[in-house]
Image 1 (cartoon, rainbow, N blue to C red):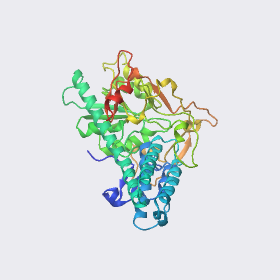
Image 2: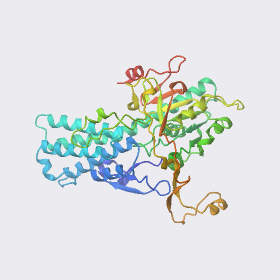
Image 3: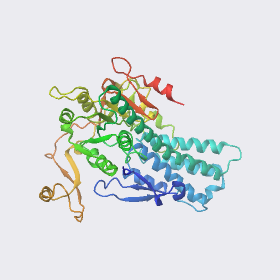
Image 4: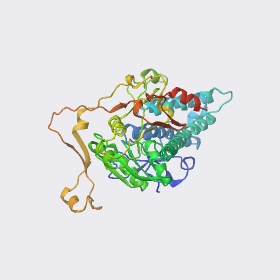
Length: 445
């Protein structure tokens, strides 16, 4: 199996400590062009996040952290960086003040990204505690911040790999234990949206389960929903699965029910990514760049109710209710997410506010301009030498209004398991609800 296309790569193929910079793939031009660009400043990280060249809360947090680390490396080499003049090394309080200005500034690049806030708060906490130590130098402060910034990046990759491996082991053991498959038999998996290495620091969450199954030699086929109207499956998951070198097929959103009835699908795996904190949580970051927000988020409630990309609920419902003409059994539904996504203060999904997206997103489509007649003759392929032109077109009459919710809530009763870096949580009792507070308490070190 080849390595999946990732949001990051280290310049020169070594470690970040060696390169002191990182390269990101420009996701604005995917999937038609794979274009890498170097980021070694805070402003470079800010611009990439703000413009959505990089997306996915974990990936955003990692880039912001590494941007800080890159500039501090420059400072420690004896040169001024854009954010830190050499004079900031004259005293610990001076460097701390410069640093806190930059963390506050970076938050404004995407104030709705939960992981970004958490990473910046973590960096601030280390900076403040180091600066408070008796005799601490500015150099020691810089080194402590570099260390934690790199940890943000590395820990996300490790966390995603554990989620993927835990999920793969769970579904294989479940199906073999039930006698649903023979020992060693490969399985077919369905997923939705984009939850892979382009949205994280590497590997992915739900797509990480698929990647782990492939690495273990247990993946038969990966099916992915087109995921309109923003087409995350068509644009991004397709590219990730192709780069993994696994057999894969895109499924039109309106054909999911037919797929489950006709094909033997062994697992539906979806993600659950929080995108927004409560406004009160944002107050914890210093300085003047705070934005007050209403509560909107993709999350998992304490009872297991899960908010995720629109269509996750209806796919989960189809998985639990086999077509009367189909010989296929119900399909297990697995939610893959880090423990940080569990909102233990929220009793159920009833409290989740559903974000409504603008009509134009559903009324337009963006893609590569192609000659359809030529594609029909060449079995859907496009000549490599053909110039790449991308355009946005209106597919409805002007003025059409669309009801366009960003996500829906899947009730816990439809979910077979919730896989995290700690392991897999299972429902309790016949109502299918979870006790995620108990799960976290039992597994947190």
